[in-house]
Amino acid sequence: MILLIGWSCTSKTIREEDPQTLRGEIPATEVTTVLAKSSRFEYLVRSSGKVQSLVDVQIQSKVAGLIDAINTNNGNFVTKGAILAELNNEKQKLAFDRAYIQLREKQVAYNDLIIGYPNNADTVKFTKAIENIRVTSGLATAEIGYREAKMEFENTFIKATVSGIVSDLDVKQGGTVTVGQVLCRVHDPNSLVVVSHVLEADALKLTANSGAEIITLSETGDILKGTVSEVNPRVDEKSNLVKVLTKLQKNKDLLPGMSVQITFIIPYNKNIIVPKEAVVIRSGKHVVFTLENGLAKWNYVTVGRENGKEIEIIEGLKENQAVIITNNLQLAHDAPVKVL
Image (tube, rainbow, N blue to C red):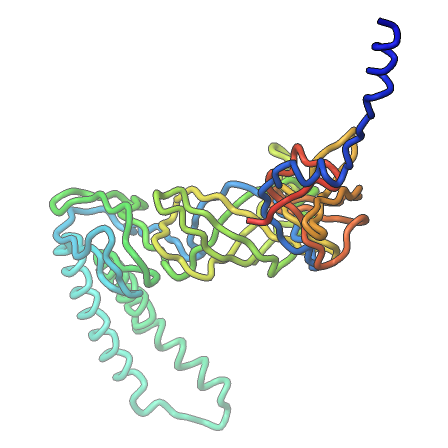
């Protein structure tokens, strides 16, 4: 029995598997790769904002009265000087006509007084004398009265002070208005900007002409391009935020008062840039897997800034290396991979 056991032990040979053979038996992990690129890292600052027009005015009535006519509607485009509404002006028209007659009377009296008035060589004395005649004849007072009556009459025609689109028109024909009452607003649709507020630390990174992307909150979620036009050089004492104005390159389907999301794009130094998904954490260190001859290679890297989409690699990668960005969470060094 002892002999049989000894023969059995000596007859067995211990076989160690070849690592290369084992690796060949493991199915390759399907991955997606991108090339590491060297470019300027784009630091992103995100904020919410409101669409406003740089040309947006309230149209107010300068006199009180009854509205005889409304000549426009909300959404209409009007040119500067267009009559938007007309007030009943019978009283103002009578005062205007009376002032015109009085002016003509005083002009006749003035002309009678200066006929034959000697024009001597002393121009200063002559000018003063003529001015005195304008006053004593009543012409100067009549001219002022005429201008006042004309102004009161013209104020019954409420006009657009700028060219643009009418909004907030809520008065009706037959209604009344008071002095200073706002009838509507007019804004220029070609002067739209986004007003947003950012942290003071981020505001210091922004400059005029910094790029921006604006995302509307509509169903389409259109992305529009913009450029910073103004960074207010003062921090708001209540919110500790800085006001930023961004000019839109196009204003498709935007209206004043709309809420949008805005992302400011700030370029930094040139470095290796990879998608954020390429970096995994192993034992508290940042690792990027690269593809070499069908195998995943483990690379320790030093990372810099990130913007939610991309991350900056300070050390550990070279340009144009194939970087694995999918199915890399469970990869090991020298694991076989297959590029989709």
